[in-house]
Length: 293
Image 1 (tube, helix red, strand yellow):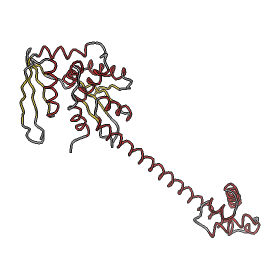
Image 2: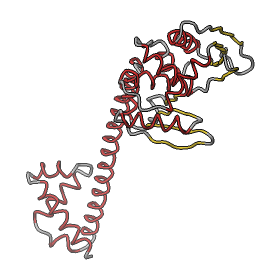
Image 3: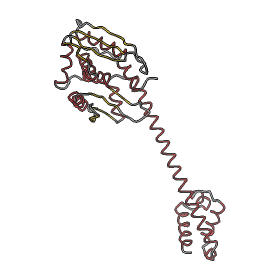
Image 4: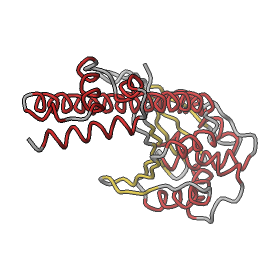
């Protein structure tokens, strides 16, 4: 069973931008975030275990420059690692290198290119918790300049990203459900958005149910404690000579409580045909008299 992050990656790997500028932005972020290797001045390589990402890199590279020659090697995995790895080699490394310089430039101006850039960033190093668990999304880079660029870009797009250093890596992350949903929507992960919203709604419903159950349990506990205290007060008064000196209303209240030991205050008030505040006042008086014994 694949992870939620892998499902997102597989979905957006099949989204191909229409415009040349968007293809360039996505390829730049994908390669830079995943640290493509320059084998020589004229060739670079890229390794991935995801066949859909491998196909996308080939397609985007050829879209940037049809003269780029590519070849793919598939290496069979052994041991515990079951996924095959795809090694992509491409010529005209200088052309790819110029694409990667987008990080040293100014803010990406077009909305369409920003969206493609973020899609490529997630393909390169994105991670996201399954929506049923704690909300957390992150993009990882080994370069501070790249992480800072992404933070500035997300801020420009009205997100509120956070940046931290973990080991030798820089982590840009979001941990609010609404922000994560917006990000998934921007990168065209539509199926992931539906699953995320469904899981979030279910979590909210469960949270509300748990809150109501806890509230009801708390009310029942308080009610049980109040009834126990009232019965103790009644026993104390009955074991003294003060019971004979009580008013008819208080004696009536005591008898009703003894006859209905599990009834709520509202139910007792209804039996006596008085208000809730009236029954509360009677038991407060009974408690005062019992405490004085």
